Image (cartoon, rainbow, N blue to C red):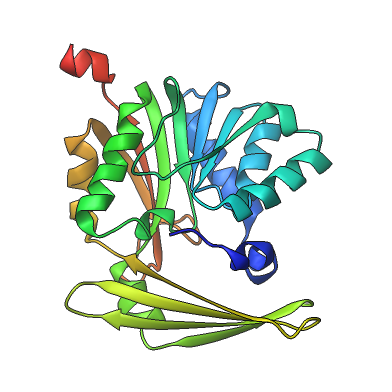
Length: 254
């Protein structure tokens, strides 16, 4: 999934997100596993708020997204902060990563990995992240939960109103597949133009996620609620995983 027109309004419509709390949690997890610098990939970086914050914290960031529009917004933000030369931006699909070398850590937030499904694609994306991860490297990523898809999003329509545009976000859940189909309709107030985008999300049982991570050499060391970063609850709308790579690909296959 790659946002196109929606990219330019993503930050306005995502204004309720607590990036400071997210940043503090992610950095705490990285530093808690002795990663205070080095190369970190933001997988599905979007408009790059977290990418920029991690760059300012001293990490050598790679921002990866399928959407050129998202990367363009991030590029403009980096220019404004004089960070352009410190962040490598790559337009890539997470199913076909090429990071030109190993990384010390990867982060992925705001349910990027839900968009990758179905399950065989989700597994491939985990395998790709694992391939470039150094031994003892850390992967911190979140997922919308099956509970959120079935109990919060399913059948719901959300309206957002920003200064330049209005957006209607509609959701339909297929109980048999666990897939949520989403539709975004954007109306530009100044020009009267309308745009329509469609995409899907998939969710998976927690044990399925853990098993796939272990299959590709990760040990899951922590799972928290992805909204308040406290303990996981039965009604947690999002999980955030911390997984540590147990070996390099060379060690495992050499």
